[in-house]
Image 1 (cartoon, rainbow, N blue to C red):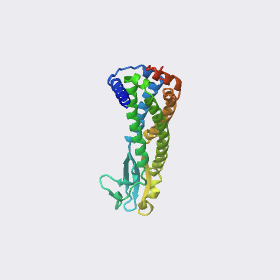
Image 2: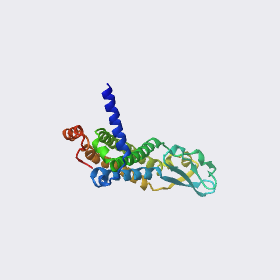
Image 3: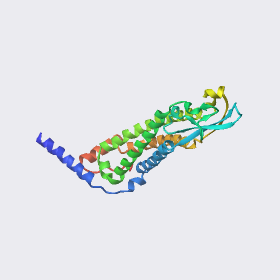
Image 4: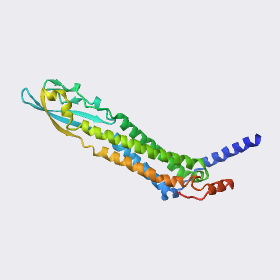
Length: 257
């Protein structure tokens, strides 16, 4: 019992020494495992920035039946795309054609898909930073450990799947947002069917949101491709060599870094 406690303390002491001995080594960034992780880090930034920073508006032109005046009303919307909270407004007076347009809003709430996508992208960004720090600062610790590469491999598989799920959900939500803010909104406004004549004016270009979907699927491809290089670092790829190196106290030969 005492010997087991001594061995556990000795292993903890060795682990603490390894963690405290930070040694910068940029060679892993030249290999697929580290290089692709940098690409994943950059792609995650573009993913949440192009979606989370979007602001737009849709405009509708009105012709009042009384006085035959031409007016314009707008509804501003932005991330996280709770369109049912985006009311119409007109400058300087919201009462156009004797109608209070603040009582009318866009249709739909797409915040769940948008927030899931952006939040996951932010977590991926943070994980990539931590992984890169481990790769370049604690290379020996990563190579000697059997758990760290396995954890990295499992996280990579889960991230690949979540990129597929979150991007697909966000792509579907983006399609619905385009419909909800497009010409079809004229038919949904009750005053446009009776009191005034409405024409769809314009809507802000959603090119950046299209880019966010592209980067979402690009992230999925990057993480799926990197799974092979992370797998090569685990004991599943070469269990005999890894076990031998650990039993001898040596450092296993690098396979992906």
